Image 1: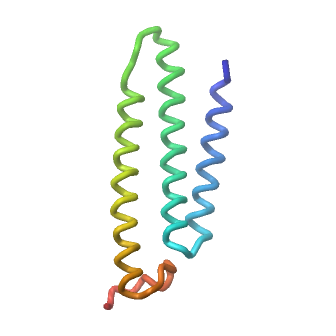
Image 2 (image 1 turned 180 degrees about the horizontal axis):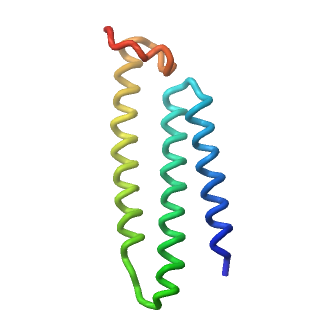
Length: 106
């Protein structure tokens, strides 16, 4: 059996990679990918704690799986809306660099 600390270290590393991607990239699509990595690390945490808690209680609990499904649904919606905004901005300005898209003027 793999110790819980390994999952948490992996999740923290994945979150840090996603955070680095969000903070260091200028491309909007790369920023969106970093956010998705951070959401996936949160899913790993939820599933890790759910798995170990259900082993301690010796009864099936569905809370961790439900939370993970909700996070997946939110991530899918966030990706759809984010990509729609990026495509719209690209059509208007022919550019998807995040620092150039800060103006609200058309």
